[in-house]
Length: 62
Image: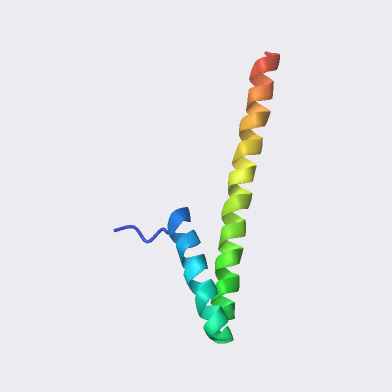
């Protein structure tokens, strides 16, 4: 069994924790951690897209 979290699961957790934070701010550190994880995920995806664009440019010039 894999322990990796999918982007879909992370987004779901983000919404759930947001509701909990409104009920009790004690959950704010968890919310912030999930936001950090989402930003890391997006940054990784952005980097991969930049790599693809770079390689496509090299192939087009060849």
